[in-house]
Amino acid sequence: MRVLQKCGARFRLSPSALVTVSVNPSLTIFETIAAVLLVMGVGFLARRTEVLSGAATSSLGRVVADITFPALCFKGLIDSGAAELTRGLLVPALGFITLGVATAVGAVLARVFCDTPAQRPTFTFCVAVGNWIFLPLPIAQSLYGASGTTVVLLNNTGAQLFLWTFGILVLRGGKLGRDGLRALARNPGLWATALGIVVALAVPHLTGAAEVPVAASVLRIGRIALTFVAGLTVPLVTVAIGAQLAEAALDQDAASGRGGRPVLGVLVGRMIVAPAIVIGGIAAIAAFAPELMPPTTKLTEYLIAAMPVSLSTGALVQRYDGDVRLASKAIAVTTVASVVSVPLLLWAVARFGG
Image (cartoon, rainbow, N blue to C red; front, side, top):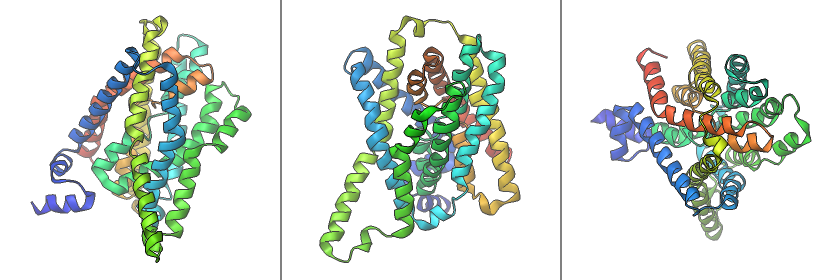
């Protein structure tokens, strides 16, 4: 019982959550991903029944990208504190490198699994861009508390840099263009991340920094409002993705059975090959330089590496004239597969001493 109490104090979990996390982390991962799929189902049904229109679905995605997600980045980082951030300086680089490794895997497998050369950029992009933020975030929060949240948000910084440079370069067949650089410069999530790091390092105790009671009250009100807005991110993006999948299903071509071989290739690359390489590299770093890779960081990076195709790839593929059918199917298939594959992979890592 004392062990459970210590775990509860470490992870800041309620007693009901404590039993699940401390006894069986794989069950927590399974339950979280299954819950995300159920919420995606709500979005799917809302779009199919016209509760959400196409325009509303698009607007929902914009709200997440431009408002709630930046709020989440900012809040998560200022809550982490300076000490937690300075311990995680390697994490943004890992976010960049992880996507680079997965891109190389996708480029190799594309020559084996793609039916036509035109599919290769989308195929490679889908293998490269895992769901590094919206799906692992609630899992990391449940398993590792504030430390896990910090790792996910810092990893997002490097991953975003890769996405809007080399990722778009891959998707556009080797042409980045001004719009890719412009999107990077205008990315609210990156600016919120940078601001959150600056504030966390410069003002460790933001609310307590104000000696005047009125100012302290204003800061507390602002933090409460920020918490409300940030908390909308995961539910809204999950509903939006379900609605986007419904839009793909409304297209007869997207709903057809063609294209099974490329989807299988994405499944192999995204869920097996790329995670195996990345997890092996992270384990090596942890073995030879444990001070650079604390246990929470290592396990959270394992989790991120094992994630399915990012929920946002469909919109990006559509924006840059890629194979939307392949991307939509890859999102759906890998997300469903992750209900089993992610808990199984992390159980294997824990079982065999990764």
